[in-house]
Image 1 (tube, one colour):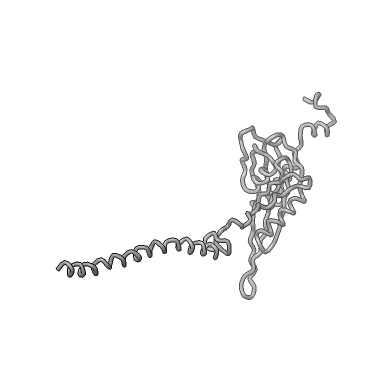
Image 2 (cartoon, one colour; image 1 turned 90 degrees about the vertical axis):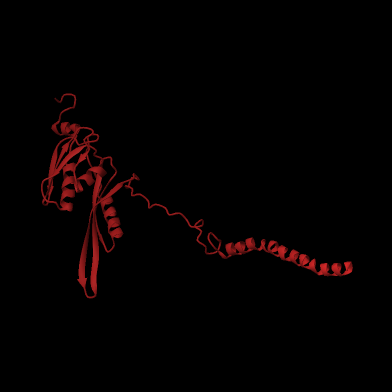
Length: 229
């Protein structure tokens, strides 16, 4: 009987030898996962080297150069008004744009420019070139103007008055834009005529051009500053 039992138990131990290779199979397959990821990087996945979405090689955008005066000083530009004109033709409409722009160095120089083009950016660029050609020197008294001044252009009439430090620019529309680029920080202004942007801006520039300092007035009268009352 003992011999029969030993023969029956021998086949029962055989399945234990079959389980050992099955357990080793997943362990041998795990190193293959990194190899698949490496192939993906080579093909150009996220951040890959060939046509991926990585932005490391893209050059950075540079800001456009600032406008400068003929003497090399930087200028400040402000767009006062952009007008759109449409022309009805066969098949639709054609649009054109015009821009009114003022520029200055905030130290007593100001220019007015006007440009027309089919695109907004192009008309602003043309207006900037036109304004830089017409820079005019303005006589200022520190952060304000030396005296009251009034001028008109077309239907536009502008009145400018000096103000004490800390007042700010009490003006609106085109008058404010001109005062900011010319370098005035304290002023009282009022538009008394037409609201047309071109007339108001040119009337403001005329009023600023009429300003005279104390020394200039004494020189016109033939007096010296020491003897003046």
